[in-house]
Image 1: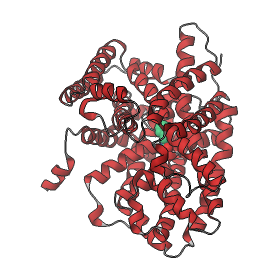
Image 2: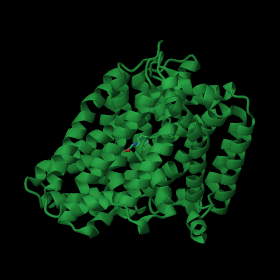
Image 3: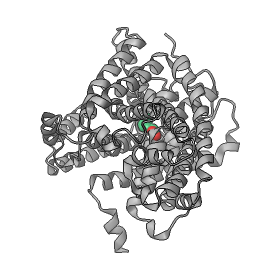
Image 4: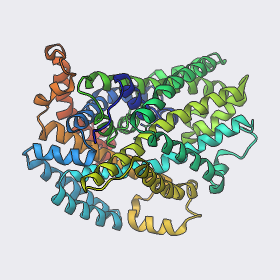
Length: 513
Ligand code: PHE
């Protein structure tokens, strides 16, 4: 059976942008900006996108398009093409470092798991990285959908005009039975989009939903900017201040750039594998990066002026509750409040569904193609159903324990044994931290090592272009890409990784100077 392809270049760009633009831009970016000093964070974030995010994204798309297969097979094929055992040695060293760290963090389960991974790595090689990101994608979906559920609830509240009269955000998330129906609605929406397939599902949904999202954002910005005192918010977003720069801000910005561009999770590999040869990867990745960044900045512009005007400067540090806790108040104080609220949360739902669909798609592609390899046929609907059931079951745990562990004490015990000191406040925080801060940089690191060092980026670079493009014209871009992939990206990712693991304290090192 022939693999499906994207119907058009625009379709691909919109679908990839649909995956990238999501809660990361509209929910997480503003609250990270609020917590990390405004304009300075934004500046570093932009640098991270250009210098690290985009080269990594090009590499992932290149792997996908060259290999034309799911991420697991692509990784192992890539390894066969390279003849550099040094790669394996580096990775084994890194993994051994991790085991040691987990051991000191009393994370018994993780030590066992990593030891198993090293063993599997020696047998199966880089395919393991593909497995890791497939599993991580599904795990991320399980809690991403919970935030999606909150959005469904807030749309309902806006429609029934109970946005500020209903229970507070904190009360709402701590009552699982209230979150559960919206969670199932959100997962079902995701399932339906992926079930539709590449062209009729994801591509169609993105073509309609992405432009709608930008139009809605612009409308809300118009309203937000015309509130009294709105300029303070704009200044906060765009004016960097020297004292707000710190290594922590740099590292947070890099992590956020990864999450926001959906990197390190095989999404770009999977989507790239449906890409035609006549598409220019540099241009496509550039467009996705610009759209993603634009969405984040527009979200900031929609939110900060309104928050400054209505809640004052103290409102911006509200953390993850910025959107759900503070914004309803903001809408409430606005003329036509419920209308803006409905627009805003509907837009957020659009953004979240296209991202969660990409996470499920990634798992579904792997299931289908791995089964076919074993000469068994698995239909798309069944693959989607398996992914759906798995993520929904896992998501129940998140729903039950967003506020604290009290509903699932037995899971807390197991998690504490498994993760040791790495366990965070709740199951939600623990899974989020582990999946996005640990697994994601790990896979991205392997990707740049493979592309930058195992494969030869100089030879590869022309493959980034479309068939028939003039290589001379793009020469400087291709050279820049090779340099970034070989040096800048791996070193920066390693720094993030080391700092997240707590192995190196960059703040202390910087303070020495
Ligand atoms: N990039 C998405 C966002 O910004 C989140 C995401 C991460 C989606 C990884 C898919 C994979 O919300």
